[in-house]
Image 1 (tube, one colour):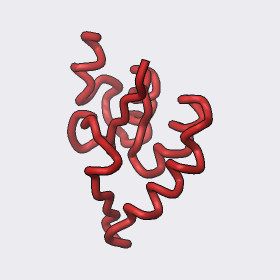
Image 2 (cartoon, one colour):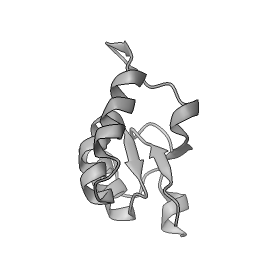
Image 3 (tube, one colour):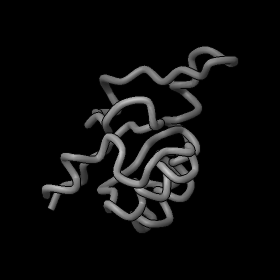
Image 4 (cartoon, helix red, strand yellow):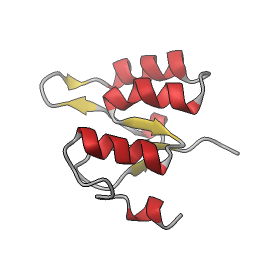
Length: 90
């Protein structure tokens, strides 16, 4: 099974991403792509759970479970299933 990465910050449904084709930005700090890629390189050999615990800070998830995304929604103050229709039907 290959890994699938998603970007999710609670503003729209999780979007599948490819690191080499994605620019990451922060509202106050601007382009943080290099920082995100460095963190990804550091954590990519860890379990999905550990990876997601760390990388969720950047809105990045690897092979996320529905429960992980529902927890993110709680953190963002959203209903548990908001924007997660694709994951609910999987």
